[in-house]
Length: 148
Image 1: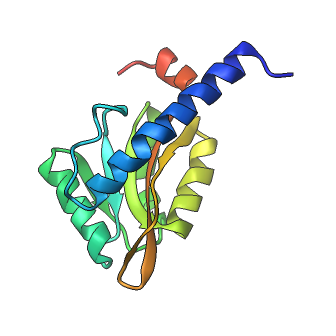
Image 2 (image 1 turned 45 degrees about the vertical axis):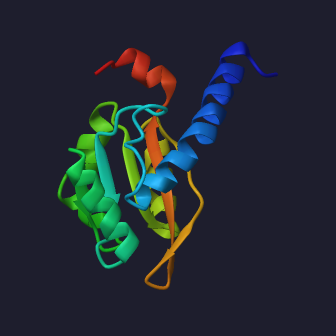
Image 3 (image 1 turned 60 degrees about the vertical axis):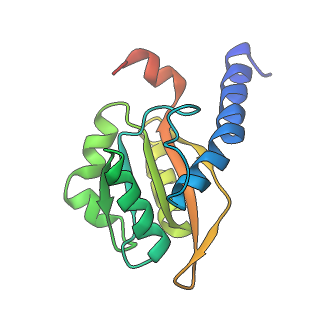
């Protein structure tokens, strides 16, 4: 049976997808506004520098004062360098424009740390790859327990 809490979490997640997807997609093209009006503040951005649209996303993040982290499609480097550990240690909002395998792994690892994909935009083509704009953030209950 669905509880009131489950309903509210679903409603907030749905609202985040409806509002955040178009904003992130335009931001990924480096033409749109920073997604702070309709989404939580971004703490970090992930991009793959070998893919032109993703590299532009990383550059746009840096210009907007967001910590941007490059990786070559293999997220293990982020783990080894301690980047992922730092994100999971406190409530962190992460955006990215990456290939699906990278998004899939980040999403699965995030589940173990109370993080969820709260927004996915339409895929874009770049360098022969499909890139997916996304935002991963803590579940609402985690943000309430650990405010920034």
